[in-house]
Length: 106
Image 1 (spheres, rainbow, N blue to C red):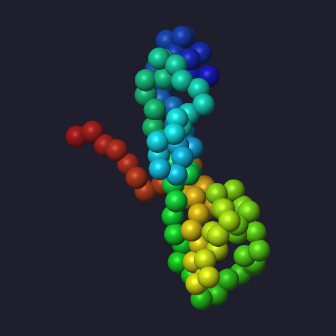
Image 2 (cartoon, rainbow, N blue to C red):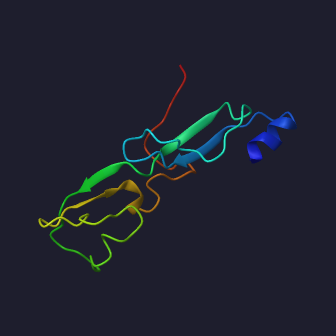
């Protein structure tokens, strides 16, 4: 874990990561842990289940919807909506922090 190595050199470190905490958020989300990792920011749980509404126009195909990472048997619903894990949207849990959620200290 790079955080552990950098903290050992005296550099305060903040980890920014996404998580795979299970669909209900109760699974252990990070594969590695250490007491030195005491400042962690999450980009979100990639396993969170979302529903995408049906579209009037589709560019491409829907053949792979049930097989793509985050999709499962039945993800493509008969009405054209898609129920899947948020990881089906590339970059939805971006570790670089490119999202609309923020935290501020006043």
